[in-house]
Image 1 (tube, one colour):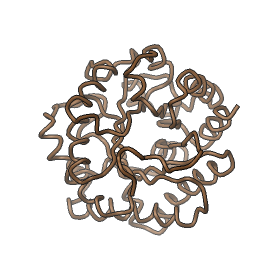
Image 2: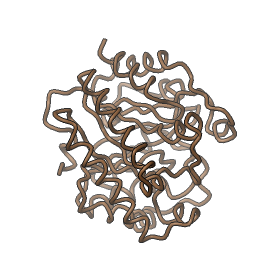
Image 3: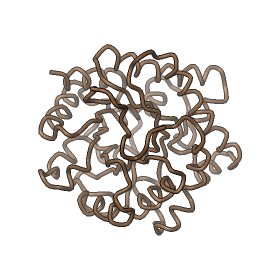
Length: 310
């Protein structure tokens, strides 16, 4: 298992691909109902497991073809107590499904050959990522997220990746919980169209607050669930930017509020998205993770991988 300071495998691979747009692809492109935006229930059927495995295999093959590494993200973003309860899942069921997700990924990686592959346990916020009704303290967040993270502690997971976080205190709690279970952890904040977190914090302030409260334990930070037009203007050649090592972008320029109301998928321009991300990565070459979030599919991922290699 990796440690927080060596999350990436010891290879010459410069770029790792990450894909977290599966849910929107399943809902809008494949017509599969996902109550509560949860994809982990697919683990309970042979057909569902085949679907999930297909995404994992596609990502590994894309990495192989383009000479990149891959971060496999588990389908467990909303597999926590509150969100699970809302669609009928008990804590014990969630514990098993979190573990089943990592087992599926480990089996897929074992059959993948020599592609540098990281298994990431994907966890999300307790509440609505864009409009959290009630913010937790860091202590509350540590207690809450420890339940899901504890289920992952003795699996084949390489890193816990907390995606689409809206405020620093929840991120602090997640980092502390991961540290308690001796797991590496990555924190990914989402931003609105003004480049700020939904709760108003700036990226440098949020990163500094998390690092200060956790002795810099997080392996690195990322930005996800936003279009490059939303965060590119606030990226600066400053010390805090060295902590940002991943960009996992939305296909659409729409705001979060607009996306929540959308009845059709806005898949944007895959080539333009790829070019924008690769341009940012060239400006900040320490960035090692590029990928797609809402509205993206394998077209976007392929374009991202190819553009980054040019």
